Image (cartoon, rainbow, N blue to C red; front, side, top):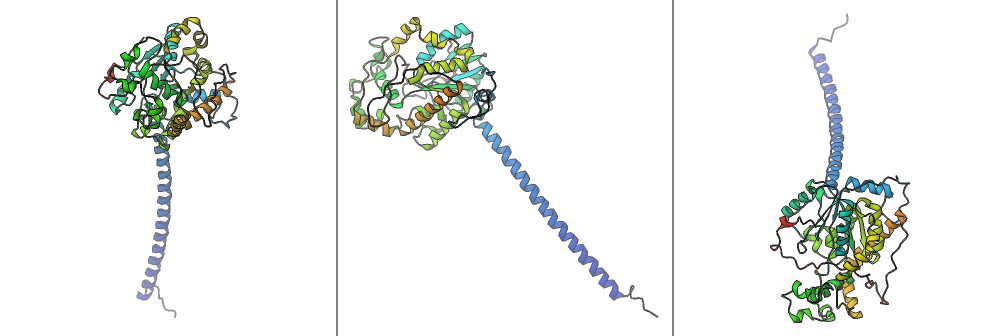
Length: 403
């Protein structure tokens, strides 16, 4: 007779231990699977969060406005020189909000004179600020100005001497930017002599503009100013063009690679066109092609005798070229400005090729200097002087001046 061990205490103990071991193994496996699942889930969520934050950061820090992306689709995808993108659609989008944050002594008064004629002819709103000495704004002033700009009746073109404003950072719709720059040394020379001797609008107008300037400063030889390192002829005063495109960040005013790269990025992302003054007629042709609702017939107006009579009053007087030694010193001090100028010139020429524009501008004269020295700019292209900024002098709410 066989004994039944199933109910014995020893058998029960073995069965209980076996069941416990099996449950422990199952629990361990479940724990491993759960940890793996949580790890994978956490990784996926982290990746998604980073993507969302990156997208948000891009949008809040000046991602291209949709209208600019549409125009680039019209021109071809890339803005870089090696682009051979697909055939673009032949319907040009119409930007209804344009900002021209004009750079001092780069011919903007020439363009503003044209815009006043064009605004009346084409029935768009032109708002031209009379504040010339406040390019850097506090955060509160930036928001106020951008809100005022966004409330202008469309289509509008707003123009002012002001460093780049990042509308999307403050969740305001970003307009399309345009601008014009010129050879950096030529810009500096034009400003240097204009501050002292004015232009052809009146023999004594420089005395009205700079009444507090002493004779020793007014008649200071420019070679002495450069070679003896006067503040007016040294950095950071020479670091002038790049901040207009870099923006309102304090580091944008410090000569260096950071400001240079930020300025280039903003040109690619936020500017429809940055022209060069040495090829002004081509700039006007491109503006007419890209913004016909604003600039149609601009070149014919520019060449008209009536306009020439107005424009000839804006050329700087008593301007002359410094010595070769002084030019070489200036060039070294302005290396970042020249890097940016070369970048803009290349982008401008690329855009001309994309449009299929046959150049009408005469090639600028190149002086026989052993470096990339300034180009001779066609006159008249001068405009109002930008004085040294006085943060308390202007009221930021007095910006709305309609001609």
